[in-house]
Image (cartoon, rainbow, N blue to C red; front, side, top):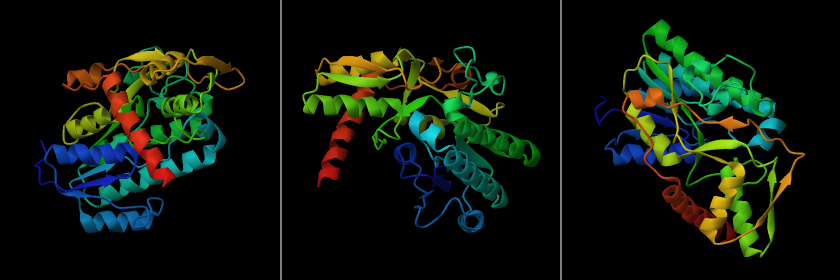
Length: 314
């Protein structure tokens, strides 16, 4: 167990996940949290990252910084996704080692698993098959981060571990329809349909792909839970254990917003993996499980979405 006075460097504190981790750390009594904005620290610059970490000398590094996006962004900008993610995580992991940091949490993604992996996906399925083609560049970058943490832990006797979250959503999410993940995109599409009195929405693919959602507050809780914990596995799946078809998520949001829309399907667009749900046995073995029901999480997220619209309109 880490003392509450331990200095923690949180990379990516302004993002959806990072801002939630920051709140969770404070809620659990950790006050010595160091952050750095993009203007203050360019995480793509190896030398600057190295000097920064050697100067602050944290006890823990949490890597919540990443370039993320939905199917369209991942498929359109593969070079950006593999370069930026590989550079960010490599700079932070290696520089943490050079600065004497013993504990590190790296946030990966459920995209690391093979396209046709058995479901629910166990950690041992990593690198057992071909990746989903629409986001393979991002996936390879994340796999590299897992393996880098694993290698540094073994070679240098460090506690560098990775957490693999399911599809995350939460306050401070990205609602840009060109680059967002499916759930925030659904929220925005259905909200706009309601205020513009539309009768239908269009979903990518056939709407039958199964997805597991994880509220960002739960992944933040998992980060703090596993932060100083010694575990034998190099990475752990983090999810809710609940799944729905994408079309059913759309119907759920419609019900919450009190609107009934016809769903049209754009079959020219990709579905992604047919099913993505994580096996959570490892997390449960250590005593962690998600606590936030989808209904509760949606209420919190939709409230923050409406606030973000008001801020942008000013």
